[in-house]
Amino acid sequence: MGQQHRNFFRLDVMLPCNYRVLTKEEAEKIPLPDQPSPEFIEQHFLSNLQQLNEQISDLLVKINNKNALLGSIFNALNAKINFALESIDSKHLVNTMPMRMVNVSGNGIAIQIDEPITKEHVVDILIQPLEDEEPILVRCDVVNIKQQPSCDNCFWVALKFQYISEDDRRKLIYFLQQKEIEAATKEREQQKR
Image (tube, rainbow, N blue to C red; front, side, top):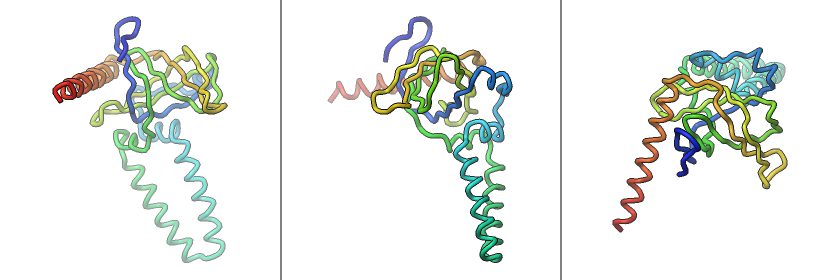
Protein backbone atom coordinates (compact mmCIF):
# COMPACT_ATOMS: atom_id res chain seq x y z
CA MET A 1 0.00 0.00 0.00
CA GLY A 2 1.67 3.18 -1.12
CA GLN A 3 0.56 6.72 -0.61
CA GLN A 4 -0.23 8.81 -3.62
CA HIS A 5 1.40 12.21 -4.09
CA ARG A 6 -1.44 14.12 -2.49
CA ASN A 7 -4.64 13.33 -0.65
CA PHE A 8 -5.51 9.69 -1.24
CA PHE A 9 -3.98 6.28 -0.71
CA ARG A 10 -3.72 3.97 -3.70
CA LEU A 11 -4.48 0.28 -3.37
CA ASP A 12 -4.05 -2.70 -5.64
CA VAL A 13 -7.32 -4.61 -5.43
CA MET A 14 -9.64 -6.87 -7.43
CA LEU A 15 -12.86 -5.07 -8.42
CA PRO A 16 -15.74 -5.56 -10.83
CA CYS A 17 -14.50 -3.17 -13.50
CA ASN A 18 -15.26 -2.49 -17.13
CA TYR A 19 -13.87 0.12 -19.46
CA ARG A 20 -14.44 1.66 -22.84
CA VAL A 21 -11.73 3.52 -24.74
CA LEU A 22 -13.03 6.53 -26.69
CA THR A 23 -11.56 9.17 -28.91
CA LYS A 24 -12.16 12.71 -27.71
CA GLU A 25 -14.66 13.16 -30.55
CA GLU A 26 -16.61 10.06 -29.48
CA ALA A 27 -16.57 11.26 -25.87
CA GLU A 28 -18.12 14.59 -26.93
CA LYS A 29 -20.93 12.72 -28.71
CA ILE A 30 -21.58 10.33 -25.78
CA PRO A 31 -22.05 12.30 -22.56
CA LEU A 32 -22.09 10.26 -19.36
CA PRO A 33 -25.37 10.20 -17.45
CA ASP A 34 -25.39 11.24 -13.77
CA GLN A 35 -26.80 7.84 -12.83
CA PRO A 36 -26.03 4.96 -15.20
CA SER A 37 -29.18 3.11 -16.26
CA PRO A 38 -29.01 -0.61 -17.05
CA GLU A 39 -29.64 0.24 -20.71
CA PHE A 40 -26.70 2.67 -20.81
CA ILE A 41 -24.41 0.15 -19.08
CA GLU A 42 -25.38 -2.61 -21.52
CA GLN A 43 -25.02 -0.44 -24.62
CA HIS A 44 -21.88 1.39 -23.53
CA PHE A 45 -19.87 -1.27 -21.70
CA LEU A 46 -21.17 -4.75 -22.30
CA SER A 47 -20.27 -5.13 -25.95
CA ASN A 48 -19.75 -8.87 -25.36
CA LEU A 49 -23.40 -9.14 -24.38
CA GLN A 50 -24.43 -7.19 -27.50
CA GLN A 51 -22.27 -9.45 -29.70
CA LEU A 52 -23.82 -12.51 -28.07
CA ASN A 53 -27.32 -11.12 -28.76
CA GLU A 54 -26.40 -10.67 -32.42
CA GLN A 55 -25.07 -14.24 -32.64
CA ILE A 56 -28.22 -15.61 -30.99
CA SER A 57 -30.42 -13.67 -33.43
CA ASP A 58 -28.48 -15.02 -36.40
CA LEU A 59 -28.71 -18.58 -35.09
CA LEU A 60 -32.44 -18.24 -34.42
CA VAL A 61 -33.02 -17.24 -38.04
CA LYS A 62 -31.10 -20.32 -39.21
CA ILE A 63 -32.98 -22.62 -36.82
CA ASN A 64 -36.34 -21.14 -37.92
CA ASN A 65 -35.44 -21.85 -41.55
CA LYS A 66 -34.71 -25.52 -40.79
CA ASN A 67 -37.37 -26.31 -38.15
CA ALA A 68 -40.17 -23.86 -37.36
CA LEU A 69 -41.24 -25.59 -34.13
CA LEU A 70 -37.73 -25.69 -32.71
CA GLY A 71 -37.24 -22.08 -33.83
CA SER A 72 -40.41 -21.05 -31.98
CA ILE A 73 -39.18 -22.73 -28.80
CA PHE A 74 -35.80 -21.00 -28.95
CA ASN A 75 -37.42 -17.64 -29.79
CA ALA A 76 -39.63 -17.98 -26.71
CA LEU A 77 -36.62 -18.85 -24.52
CA ASN A 78 -34.68 -15.90 -25.91
CA ALA A 79 -37.60 -13.55 -25.24
CA LYS A 80 -37.80 -14.83 -21.66
CA ILE A 81 -34.07 -14.23 -21.10
CA ASN A 82 -34.32 -10.72 -22.61
CA PHE A 83 -37.26 -9.95 -20.32
CA ALA A 84 -35.25 -11.10 -17.28
CA LEU A 85 -32.25 -8.96 -18.33
CA GLU A 86 -34.44 -5.88 -18.78
CA SER A 87 -35.77 -6.24 -15.24
CA ILE A 88 -32.29 -6.25 -13.68
CA ASP A 89 -31.30 -2.93 -12.11
CA SER A 90 -27.83 -1.44 -12.53
CA LYS A 91 -26.65 -2.75 -9.13
CA HIS A 92 -27.09 -6.31 -10.36
CA LEU A 93 -26.12 -5.77 -13.99
CA VAL A 94 -22.65 -5.01 -12.68
CA ASN A 95 -22.38 -8.70 -11.78
CA THR A 96 -21.76 -9.32 -15.47
CA MET A 97 -18.55 -7.24 -15.32
CA PRO A 98 -15.19 -8.96 -15.16
CA MET A 99 -13.14 -8.85 -11.97
CA ARG A 100 -9.93 -6.95 -12.69
CA MET A 101 -6.84 -6.08 -10.73
CA VAL A 102 -6.83 -2.29 -10.44
CA ASN A 103 -4.82 0.30 -8.62
CA VAL A 104 -7.41 2.75 -7.31
CA SER A 105 -7.49 5.99 -5.32
CA GLY A 106 -9.93 8.83 -4.80
CA ASN A 107 -8.41 10.65 -7.81
CA GLY A 108 -7.97 7.92 -10.37
CA ILE A 109 -7.41 4.33 -11.34
CA ALA A 110 -4.84 2.25 -13.20
CA ILE A 111 -5.93 -0.84 -15.14
CA GLN A 112 -4.76 -3.14 -17.89
CA ILE A 113 -6.32 -2.22 -21.21
CA ASP A 114 -6.14 -4.80 -23.97
CA GLU A 115 -6.35 -2.56 -27.01
CA PRO A 116 -4.22 0.17 -28.58
CA ILE A 117 -4.46 3.42 -26.60
CA THR A 118 -2.74 6.81 -26.58
CA LYS A 119 -2.84 9.86 -24.32
CA GLU A 120 -5.24 11.37 -26.86
CA HIS A 121 -7.95 8.90 -25.82
CA VAL A 122 -10.34 9.11 -22.89
CA VAL A 123 -11.56 6.07 -20.98
CA ASP A 124 -14.96 5.52 -19.42
CA ILE A 125 -14.74 3.36 -16.30
CA LEU A 126 -17.53 1.48 -14.56
CA ILE A 127 -16.58 0.02 -11.17
CA GLN A 128 -18.47 -1.49 -8.27
CA PRO A 129 -16.42 -0.97 -5.10
CA LEU A 130 -19.33 -1.46 -2.68
CA GLU A 131 -21.58 -4.43 -3.32
CA ASP A 132 -24.85 -2.89 -2.13
CA GLU A 133 -24.35 0.53 -3.74
CA GLU A 134 -24.88 1.85 -7.25
CA PRO A 135 -21.84 1.42 -9.52
CA ILE A 136 -19.51 4.33 -10.17
CA LEU A 137 -19.37 5.61 -13.74
CA VAL A 138 -16.59 8.06 -14.49
CA ARG A 139 -14.76 9.44 -17.52
CA CYS A 140 -10.98 9.55 -17.27
CA ASP A 141 -8.00 11.20 -18.93
CA VAL A 142 -5.03 9.01 -19.81
CA VAL A 143 -2.02 10.01 -17.70
CA ASN A 144 0.51 7.25 -18.35
CA ILE A 145 0.78 4.15 -20.56
CA LYS A 146 3.18 1.23 -20.14
CA GLN A 147 3.11 -1.67 -22.56
CA GLN A 148 2.91 -5.05 -20.84
CA PRO A 149 5.70 -7.40 -21.92
CA SER A 150 3.26 -10.33 -22.05
CA CYS A 151 1.45 -9.21 -25.22
CA ASP A 152 1.51 -6.64 -28.02
CA ASN A 153 -1.84 -4.99 -27.26
CA CYS A 154 -1.78 -5.08 -23.43
CA PHE A 155 -1.12 -1.80 -21.65
CA TRP A 156 -1.05 -0.79 -17.98
CA VAL A 157 -2.80 2.58 -18.13
CA ALA A 158 -2.94 5.21 -15.37
CA LEU A 159 -6.13 7.26 -15.53
CA LYS A 160 -7.23 10.45 -13.75
CA PHE A 161 -10.92 11.03 -13.14
CA GLN A 162 -12.15 14.04 -15.12
CA TYR A 163 -14.97 14.52 -12.64
CA ILE A 164 -16.30 12.35 -9.84
CA SER A 165 -19.29 13.24 -7.69
CA GLU A 166 -18.70 13.67 -3.97
CA ASP A 167 -21.03 10.72 -3.31
CA ASP A 168 -18.98 8.48 -5.62
CA ARG A 169 -15.70 9.73 -4.14
CA ARG A 170 -17.05 8.91 -0.65
CA LYS A 171 -17.88 5.39 -1.83
CA LEU A 172 -14.32 4.96 -3.09
CA ILE A 173 -12.72 6.39 0.05
CA TYR A 174 -14.92 4.19 2.26
CA PHE A 175 -13.96 1.16 0.15
CA LEU A 176 -10.25 2.04 0.40
CA GLN A 177 -10.51 2.49 4.16
CA GLN A 178 -12.24 -0.88 4.50
CA LYS A 179 -9.45 -2.55 2.52
CA GLU A 180 -6.77 -0.84 4.63
CA ILE A 181 -8.46 -2.03 7.83
CA GLU A 182 -8.75 -5.58 6.43
CA ALA A 183 -5.05 -5.59 5.50
CA ALA A 184 -4.01 -4.25 8.93
CA THR A 185 -6.19 -6.82 10.71
CA LYS A 186 -4.76 -9.62 8.60
CA GLU A 187 -1.21 -8.45 9.29
CA ARG A 188 -1.87 -8.33 13.07
CA GLU A 189 -3.33 -11.85 13.00
CA GLN A 190 -0.28 -13.14 11.15
CA GLN A 191 2.07 -11.50 13.65
CA LYS A 192 0.22 -13.20 16.54
CA ARG A 193 0.88 -16.65 15.05
